[in-house]
Image 1 (cartoon, rainbow, N blue to C red):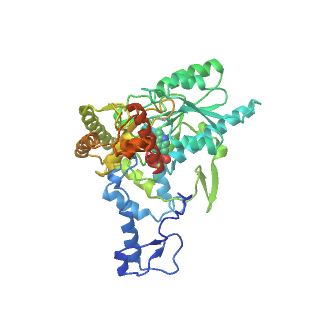
Image 2 (image 1 turned 120 degrees about the vertical axis):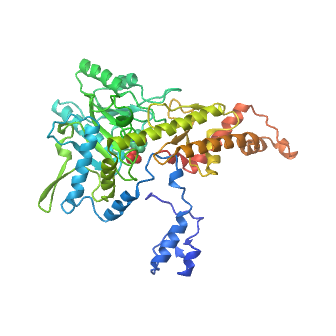
Image 3 (image 1 turned 60 degrees about the vertical axis):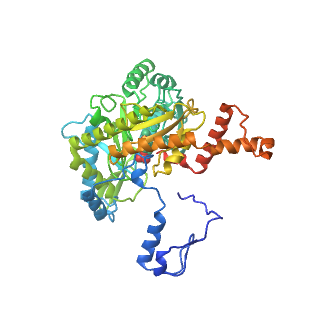
Length: 500
Ligand SMILES: *Cc1c(COP(=O)(O)O)cnc(C)c1O
């Protein structure tokens, strides 16, 4: 991140053992070195340092693709030097992005005539896609309010409290109030009835999520559409719906083709999806599709006269690589509907293996649903002595990266662990993970809890003198303190950011 801090206690130099065969002096850490070094040395130094990053394939915290076929890797490497924005110079790349937009629009049942082309763009990810969709809604609403001679300075969006952080970013950057429907214990997605109740004349859209980041659950977009249609009729408003299908957009069409969540519902005006999640492409690609031209205000589109050709663009940034667009096109034609369906079915089957394995341990409540994004979100049934943060931390020892986090309001007292099942997470790995979780639980139960001991020592001077550890607090009090300590510990280590 650009706002990096220079930690005072870190070494100001970078050393590399093997690189000393090439360079004898160490490199300054935070300043550009005075002189050059051989390319082999630069490679060795960086490669050695990167060894301490986690293994992406074992990063079960992320939806983002960590494996692609070598043929696609080749295409990616062959196009890393192409700037996507040079559409005139790389017309074929532009054409491939347009094909992707159309394929995805059809997948989402956009009402397109035979010769009509879809309206949409490739983005860096769903975050950029959501910014663009949000801007279109805001501008459309403003135009309408202005035409009616009504104030247009208090726009809001209605979402569930489970929205991904990019919605909060959109709200803050583009000055739109985010009205969040609170969650409750046992119900971790936006309640459509409550959402529609919150809609007012200043609501630019209701954002529904197809695949909640927290537990993978699909929100009921159809019910939302029906309730909102009724409210629109009663009030004369025409509040639209956006579907944030970042993770679910490439799941639902293949696993649940009859589920109506997309442009089949009249109020759904735009949809975003992350190509780099279940679109099966490495990080750096997302898509936003609009229902029709009318849903994207013309004044947001920039017509660049680039070397004599008109290039309409609607993005937040200018230059970027072409590889991800090409890789998305590769996946779409390589897999086809059949291939995506197979991959998603595999993911779902492996999710069930993991879920059933966890249920068999008898220790966990499953918070995710069978229908949804293939992930398993689970909580300890009994967290009186050990909590989910400890399980997460202990799993690191086995190489697994499994995040633990608390739910948003009003379910913040619930902590969950989440394992995302990606294409490269095999059944064997699922079985292995269950075994390792069992080991962790066993260890947590048999090894004395060190955090407990510390709390009771520091909490009771007398006992400390005698060297004895007597827990005088109630189990509940102790557990609260442990949870607080762990949360602090986890927040400090920014592990919460692992949920993306
Ligand atoms: C991942 C995710 C996002 C953000 O998408 P990026 O592609 O990472 O920018 C937004 N919404 C939901 C529901 C997500 O799961």
